[in-house]
Image (cartoon, rainbow, N blue to C red; front, side, top):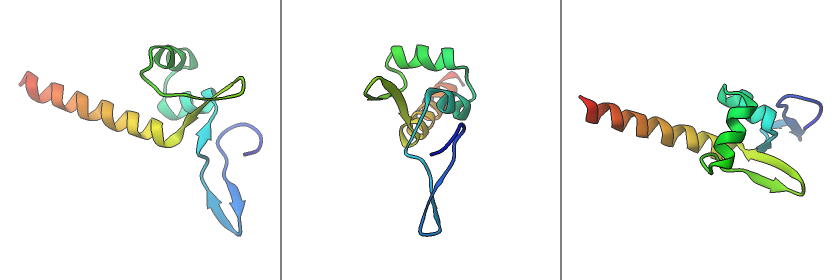
Length: 81
C-alpha cells in the first residue's frame, strides 16, 4: 500500500486487495468517525490487530462484524413484531 487511502498492490498484473487497513481507513469503510471506531475497539466490539505500536483492522473482520451486526438487528426487528 502506498500513500493515503486504500490502494491495491499489483502482483503480476492482478490487483490484490489489502488485508489490513489503518484506523482512518477502517472508520471510512464503516462510515463512522475515528473516535467511534476507537470506542468500539476499546469495548472489544470491533477486533483490532496490533503490529508493533500500530493498530490495524482486518478488512475480513470488519465485513464479518457488519454481517453479524446486521443479523442481530434483523433478529431484534423480527422479535419486536
